[in-house]
Length: 286
Length: 266
Image 1 (cartoon, each protein chain N blue to C red):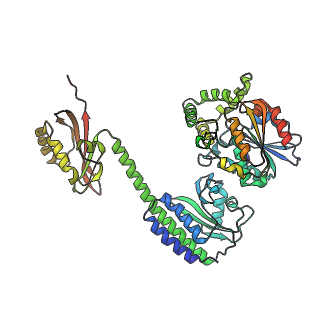
Image 2: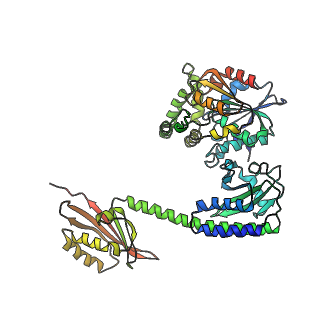
Image 3: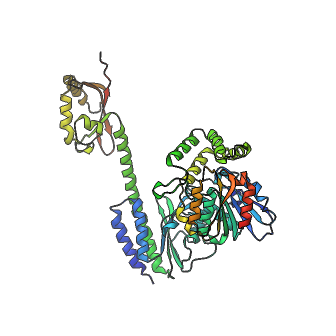
């Protein structure tokens, strides 16, 4: 007879540990495999309710069950019958069993309903040998479900934040203008690769403003109209809420260039700062 | 879920017959594509015809990009039909993509099937140069096909039907195919085409436990002879018959040839 207390303790320990270092996409297959090993099951998989006509098998062992399409209606009825609580089959029903296709030739099965980020699914474990599902199973399965839902919700949020970060970074890096953001508290700054190139910095991305303030000052001081720039800057920075636009910075030398510069205050609950945008202008030559 | 409505199921032939034949159509056609073939079997067999979701008169509301993102959704539909009609030991005739649908269904629920007949079926349409497999298409050709479908679906449908029917002396055949192809919602047609052309079921061929007849036409631009030979080589105990017909739709262009080889097999 399986020691469900030991299985859940092992599961909780490893899933909590792993959730600190991985993504939701990796945590779920890992957790399903872990549970199969810990419980000595032959089959493990999740069935995800994708839409009103689609329930799909994912992360399956054996792998040939992956991507099998099941009808969600009978599966929902099955879960409702068990009040969406984990349950076990000491003998797998042969007739009218919506999980029959994934439990062929097995003797016992356990089903653990899940709800992760409002998406319903179920974990299915199957054994070739008979099993007993007593109160210790129910207690362990509830803990396993809570651990998994909590870990996956947490890692999904982290994944989503990382994805958003990647998304917005890609957008800002793709802009043809040089973009620089400087936090008013002087602790944080961000610049895109066009700005890094302008300031002759080796890399773009987030960095302390101190790491590029000198380069920005050097570049500004090399402008042909530095006196005009400084005069306007003094006027501008006397009122922190000011927005400055169409500010022309001219550069001479071997590669003369002219930039239309804007500086916009950014106000957010958690920070304030200034967003600088340098747009290179096409200068007509005669 | 109303399976009858979802798949527009038609029951035809001898209702008291001991044996049932189920016909599954290929991409761009519907159950009417078998009308010349089924009349030969109606006297001795119970005949089940159905439309795959996304085509023919299947319930348009039943189409789900998630369910039909692989052939598995169609496999589940076929098994639903068998379960709903309480079928057992049927002879399944699958044209083109429905060949693999029948194959996968027979692996999943063998008790529903006794024999399988594939007309112009393929385990993989895309060439696999590394494995020396010739499916008939390279990725560039498929991308071109998807682009043509996306840019002007109806013009593409007209041209594609003539090419794959490949019976220029009988333009009505291509016109019939073009009419069912054009009736499919273009976005669904494109999604289904991608699912089919990018499917790869070579690894499943060896799992079949039922007798399989592979029927292959000549000059089939969708399924070259090499793809049929691959099926034959990898499906245990299968029989490959090259029939005297041209193009990808022998059941429409040479129904007599198809009936003859089927009768010998079943």
